Image (cartoon, rainbow, N blue to C red; front, side, top):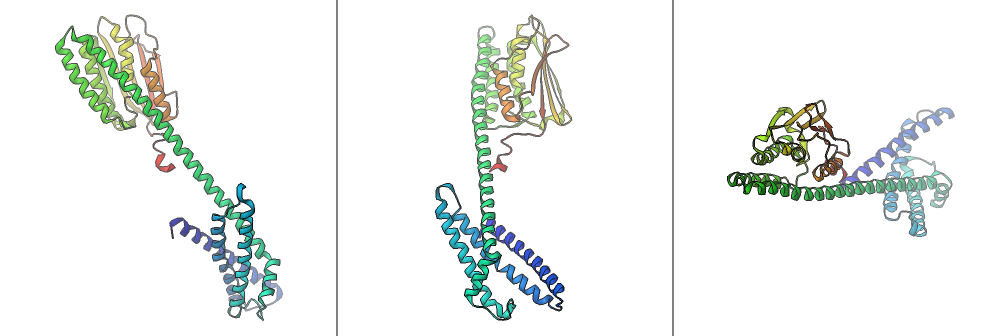
Length: 362
């Protein structure tokens, strides 16, 4: 017997035993109104045996409904089978009363089987059987609806996973192209620096490939990737790129989507710091703010006044944030007091992500 069948059998047993206790109380009230006394034990036996007889019969009806439910394409066949099951239940209950009456004492004299069957059809046994069939159908349809909902949620998770994979596949070549372009600029000016950039790029690609099939990494891992990327950019830009770090150690264990910080730093370098002929500063601020992770990546402007710029990297990042957290307003670009732009992220510390809920949906 599997766990579900065992739970159903236990529930049916408890419900009918509870009904037996209520029936016993009803017998006692009737006896008291009619002036009979001393029949408590006899009334208890009649009530509990009468209720207990319904336990196997209910399980049989549930089994029949499970295999022959009333559905659009087989209504007549199901009604015929269920009617036969109700007739069988009435006959079995009549036989049970016929066999147990000498010990239980429902009747002073045991009636004939035909008389018992007529009584069963006339009283509540016929109605109870169909009520049980109706309840079994309601339970069956509710289970099917829940199963469809789980399948729908699982399908949604698979769709989101496919979209995230497609976005990651788009982002990696984009990042690689930009890094190689930076190295190409250095080859003819400083071969030694270009060689060191290639080594750094190899380390960065190795680390990023390790996270290729991972939807979440820690902030500490993200900061490591960002440092590798900024090392490459410093070889290219030299003293024009200075980096200020302000990282709350408590924030380093928070899970975030991979390649979250590098596109923000790349955007600041591409549209501001790389345009400068003098020293520029990229400020990295990562801290916990209540139940949110606050990330700010700021530049101090380029040769021209800074304005929000949204390239492929930031568009890709916004899409990944939307799929990961279910919100599209987590990334904000705004001018800062130093004449540059600040890319600001506020992310929930807990992950409201479909991928985390997959185990529950399965």
